[in-house]
Length: 91
Image (cartoon, rainbow, N blue to C red; front, side, top):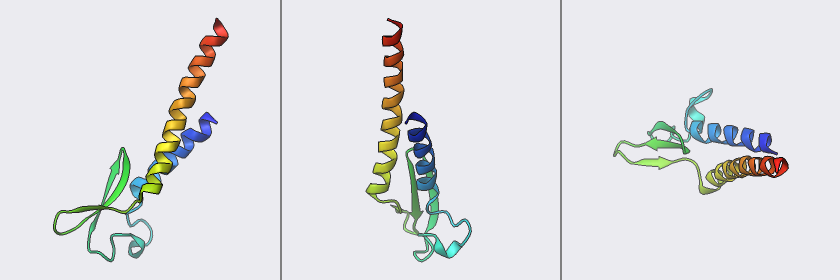
């Protein structure tokens, strides 16, 4: 479970931070029709469109961020549980 939560955290964070970048097809970028420039933030992972007026607008919704933070929290909780189980086993 720990490895699954870890990989889910890594892949979700990567997807969220690169979502606005025009990788293969530039016209599929969320910033394409708005005239904005894609901007990535790696932690906490998010993608933005930087518009001409200087405003940053996110392209990820709250649900996508919830998936990342849930996976990160599960990963952290599993690490703490493993330490506690190891201590209990030694005692």
